[in-house]
Image (cartoon, rainbow, N blue to C red; front, side):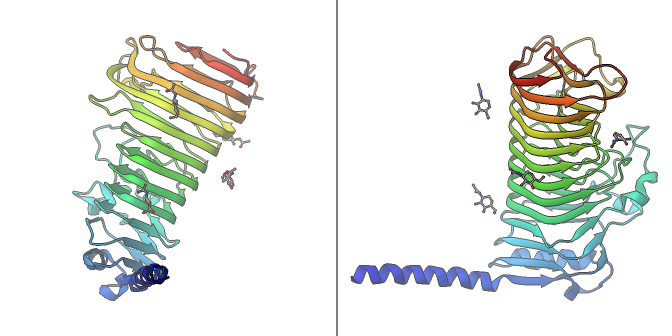
Length: 391
Ligand SMILES: *[C@@H]1O[C@H](CO)[C@@H](O)[C@H](O)[C@H]1NC(C)=O
Ligand SMILES: *[C@@H]1O[C@H](CO)[C@@H](O)[C@H](O)[C@H]1NC(C)=O
Ligand SMILES: *[C@@H]1O[C@H](CO)[C@@H](O)[C@H](O)[C@H]1NC(C)=O
Ligand SMILES: *[C@@H]1O[C@H](CO)[C@@H](O)[C@H](O)[C@H]1NC(C)=O
């Protein structure tokens, strides 16, 4: 009897303690820190105070439109921290303001991080797009990424919009257990290199229930991407969901455990794609599964491209040294804008291994002949109905 009482007393105590912590979630409102139009300094100060708080804290950017110059905010913080953006943040239009910065907003080394609030990050890329010539000159200075997440762990980004970035919208490096949900990306579709979300050297990343429209890859997974789930995402327009390009540099980490499920991809250049450079360097991509995907008017719905060599930057004569293994494409339906609905071009030195293709129905209704399924250096295992007929 006595024991019972003690146990429930302890539970009550625990409950009260956690409730207290919640109630204490300390709010740092940036508008209380000075200039209400350009919040660059105020934001940094509010972050520093919140980050030093020993109980969970929140940096609040209330409704309204604010200018924000390039900022780097860093942890580690003393407790969980939330950035609640209710307003609209606008990046400088003038590229000169980004001198010395590779991104607009950089977050470094934060654990238990939340970014939410329904607000918008406006990279103002539309007005800045004529200020770089990266389309023509590869030695140009790259424009800034809008949101850079470096070494963020156990975090969630939800109900946030990123619009008109100057370069990639979101870029992840060294992150672990980070989820994006209801993350909306919009950009004009002629914008150069405005990848939606690029992931590199990160693990346990989820992108779920999100809408991504951009001028380049909707989501791109670079080397070192492991255990990545992409589910309930719509991509339109852009270049689709892409793994790679791999094998461009030495000592790339492997890509593995990629699950793309229940996504809709519309009016894009590619649908789902794995690409690697010929010749050059080795690497590996394995355990990659695409399932329940709708393609609408996609130029190249299903692609493995191991002779990826844009702008003739490499020699196509030697085969790719990247191995691709344990890949499945299941239940992928819809329309292809070109006759080649499926193209699996693997390396002749290291053919793709354990590729499974099941229940494919991709229609092409244009004038360039029947839809095609092309394969080289791969012998997929087929299941179910396959249209266009198997290679
Ligand atoms: C991942 O991060 C979320 C959000 O902070 C947290 O609730 C969850 O426990 C973490 N998962 C693991 C396995 O650490
Ligand atoms: C598939 O994704 C859509 C969002 O694109 C979502 O509304 C729907 O609930 C998802 N279905 C399943 C079975 O998860
Ligand atoms: C198909 O996509 C192309 C661009 O990729 C676009 O010009 C065309 O209007 C689209 N057609 C339909 C029916 O949406
Ligand atoms: C293929 O990948 C899945 C998912 O990671 C994994 O469960 C399975 O064991 C892999 N198959 C082989 C033969 O490695």
